[in-house]
Each structure stands twice: as C-alpha cells, then as structure tokens.
Amino acid sequence: MAQIGLYFGSFNPVHLGHLQIAQHFLEHAHLEEVWFVISPQNPLKKSQDLWPYATRLALLKEALKDQTQFLINQIEWQRPAPHYTIDTLGILKEKYPQHSFSILVGSDNLEQLTQWKDYDALLEQCPIFVYPRGTQIHSPLSKHPNIHVVEASLLPISATAIREKIKEGKSVAKLMPPGCWEWLQNQG
Image (cartoon, rainbow, N blue to C red; front, side, top):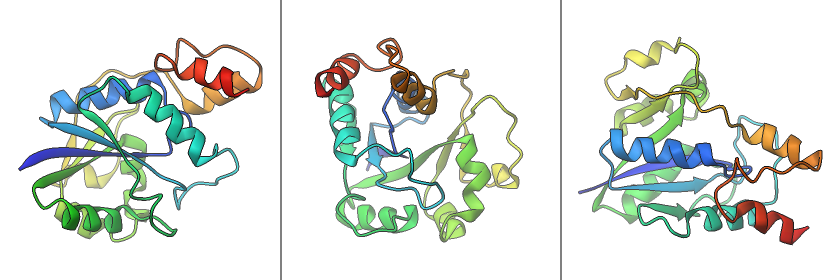
C-alpha cells in the first residue's frame, strides 16, 4: 500500500514553512506522497481573515508545480460544509483502498484534537504525525500509540504574519515558494 500523508490546512496563504514541514514529514514519517487537503473552512476557526478558496488553491498550485511527491486534493471543496477530518478520511479510504493514510498536524492541532468530531475513532483509524511548534506538547493524547511526534526545528514563518505584511504593502517574496509572490502581485 502506498503511504500517503494528509496535510490538512487552510494554506492562507501557503508559505515556505508549509513546504518544509511537508518535506520533513515525507522523510521522517516514511511517506511516499503528501497530499495537501485545502480546508474551505476549519470548523474550529473564524473565517474573517480567510482568503477566497480560488486564491488559496491557485497559490498552492503555483507552490507545488515542480513537486512530484506533493499533490493537492480538493475533496473538502467538493463536499458540503462542515468539513470534518474523520468524514474526509472515510471518503478517501473508500475511494483509494490501495493507499494507507496518515494525518499530518502541528502540535497546536494536537492540543485541540479532543474537540474534533469523533477524534477517538480518528485515533484508531490512522497514525497521526505531529510537528512541534516550539512549545512543549501538553496533550495527554501525545502518549496514544497512534500519535507520533517528529523531531524538528521550529520554523518562524506564519501565514498570519504574511497576511499582515501584505496588508502593510511589504514584500513577502522570501517567505513564500517561488512564483507565489509574483502571482499575488499580478493579481493586484
């Protein structure tokens, strides 16, 4: 079975940190591919700063255009809201029985995992690989046999900070994958 890591996120916008994290998971979680699953709206977050889906998708396509092991999956866009990871995982498992799936998350998501729909079923169905975000992990779930915290250095790149810099009229070319900043400038 092909080992696929599902990297859920709003990618609002995609930045170099996302790609570095995906590469780290690819290598340390022994994955064959990482599928970027764009979330139209995280049920646990407010949408006030969320860029249009088409913009986030176009930037992700630009960022991944030369990557052979990073793919985009739009399954959540093709389904009605709300979008829950457990439901998406079930659909993907049914559609791709030849694949074995893992979930890739940052440690902040592990801290919120008990708020996810059917999180206990999710924990039983697939491994969850956790990327530390600079703080100690305090979740009791970190001891679960299907939770795997990968050793990695902290990447000081934030989509929130990138959006703020753009609002201020500053360049974020060094924080985004090649071509993404140019794409944004061309779109005005």
